[in-house]
Image (tube, rainbow, N blue to C red):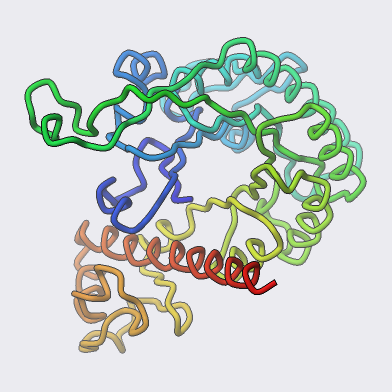
Length: 356
């Protein structure tokens, strides 16, 4: 799932994401709450309309972003008081408020408010964090069930309601509602028994889907894999299972084959803006001097719009010239590469299922 924290997958227009086959993107509750504000987005018809995105949206609860503000937050049983990274203003997030913001944004998939445990963390610290996360999960779920609603969804464009027609939405008609969903988030640090306890208690609450959070926060990759393997069998196979914040291409293929249905990571676009491309031949640092006159495509095996049209030499030139187009083209390729991995895994699993 491409990450669009501020209502935009950085440097990549929404129509390009559609052409690449992205079925869902992420927005972030904390950032959109601060700017432009969830009530403003609600008044403009919700996040789908505001950013002109006609497919699914998932919003992170804001818990991880608040966790990142280690010097600017105070955690209590009731919630988290924090100072905005934008202007220093004081704000208070409770599980109920996080859910209210996500409902206002109109996310198809909302996330329960949780506390992410840092790495490394002591047993006592992980136990206390888990206590908070489980209490907040119950409060999130109760509030969501009492206040969630059906979000407007688009119908296919028709000739008389095409974009640009008088009174037409750029996305067509919006009279087919869909119910919002809420996922719980498994925490517990790097302690197997705490992870199992978290998963089992969340399953008892009966969320619409389940995420494994608190990973990719500095722990060794082997430990990440160990925690996923510990938790995954405990989560219902008939509901979505989501690992948050991963990962490199080989990791997402591995996790998908283990049974993870959903993953997200800023890596494809962040790496792209620094000149790192993921290819069938391995990682490629496009800033390298050896590419200065290389007329080959970034990835000879890739059929994305960038690889079909541009050379490595040109992408290197853009990077060294500081051109904004550099981040856009690099990001488009990396996203296409990631989405291509997931498509190949889907086809492989489907073929294996058919053969059995």
